[in-house]
Length: 319
Image 1 (cartoon, helix red, strand yellow):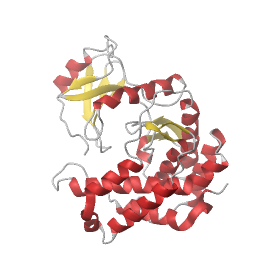
Image 2 (cartoon, helix red, strand yellow):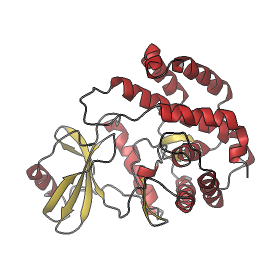
Image 3 (tube, one colour):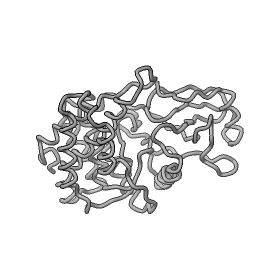
Image 4 (tube, helix red, strand yellow):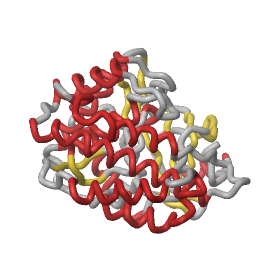
């Protein structure tokens, strides 16, 4: 499960007294997610999500994340803004952790998306980027090239405990990406973590894009590369779905047209996306205690994606 911090019903009821959202009817911990503690809250008026920020989320970054959500909501995008209390405050402290009460969105996260659902996600990401074109606040991406180098150094020789030769593979890829990273491409605020569990759907329709807690300012097409790596493979990274890939790219391009330079850079950006998740998963794999409540995710699933992108080149992303 993914509830790191237990919050009693009594504590939640006291928190809700600060808001105009009704009284507590029920509260249930949500097992999905690996970064934060989440509770589904039902009140006498509506449903909400209570999120306590743990692990990688720095409280000083929360205003940026919430401003992104507010901007997108104002532009009609299906995102869940945080709810302000009667004093206008959105960030609370619950059990010593920063926390927010967030609007509830309908829909389910998909375990096995099809091509139509991938197309809808590409369309939704394209619309998201169009809406973010006017967003001026910035937050550097701590999990770009410099961050990957730091993670690789922190994992060190232990990478080879995951798989023999992994440390050398990571070092080679870092050298390649440092020499070939397309810094001159258009930049904007991006989601940076648009996996299927961060997209809510009803049928083939996107009803919500959630969990903006890696949002940052970076290369816009990198966001598409992350989404491609997340949506177009089997969970273990061993099977690539061409139909999902083409649908995702087509849906995106119809809303936020890719320039020739962006499309040409997608193979490199996808290699970077694969390395990013390989390294964060490797760090978690090596540093999560055996008795932890969180299930570790296998970093080799993204090594397989990386190997795929290295071997296929630009044909995957051709128009």
